[in-house]
Length: 357
Image (cartoon, rainbow, N blue to C red; front, side):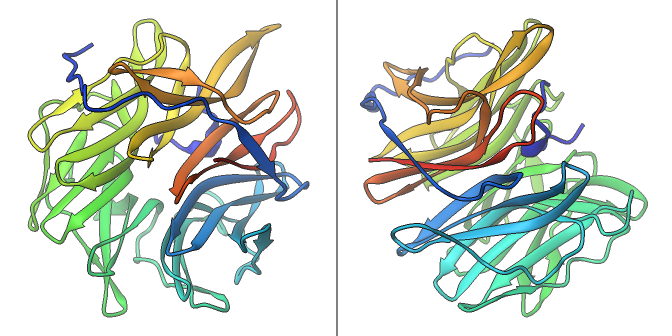
């Protein structure tokens, strides 16, 4: 199974305490209008005053989709025209500057033949960037290296075998970094610290890239019991990952921390939930996702925000929504943004964007 944010998947170890980190104050959220038509937002990113959110227009529920990208102009969200009208989705976005933004996802123009999809904003318009040639695949994440090089992760059919993939976009072409990923499943999240120091969260485990090959780390099980979905780093000795842990009692939110030597799992609430994204807000980790409630034999998702308190992650206030999911979070100065979807049971979702601070 490939973990997808928009799929609403209903799908312990020693803990390293971090006493230097303190609790966040309660968050007060302000919802900002985006789009009233059926739609979702899956990711948000910002740099140097540029804030972008991407997702999917749901033309015919989840069966017919279009890319969706918003730019925050300081007052409101502005929807940007898309270069394709085929069945496609956007899963991630990375901002380089006002004149360079990358967004990736998958192209479903041909049924049952999903392929990687990438676009680049040049300051005035989105342009499709030809994706790697593969019979099937999808991009789950995009990251920008310190030298400005775009990296993308996901899965693809390579020589007849489907497994996780990572590509770098160098001199107008995708360079595959495949060594070590032959037996892996979907590259969910990617953090690039340098050309010889990158991390990849998989649908089973965590892998490190040394410039030549990917190698799984021992601390994060590769059996699918811990699935990282996003990462954020303030440096090579302070990396946080969010995701979902599959336990004998069901799905639980997952938060991992890397101190430069080892990955450790931190305590999280013991309720049915999972996390999709994590950010450092005023130096402290904040993770977002969804928690599940059963009502009349129907599973309903509710927005979930977790922050660190006394060495453990605890639930804090979330944007007001009767039901829905938070799929992205990003710190922009003194403001914390989150995006996702809100919905009523048995109805199509609509895009959600809110900020605190």
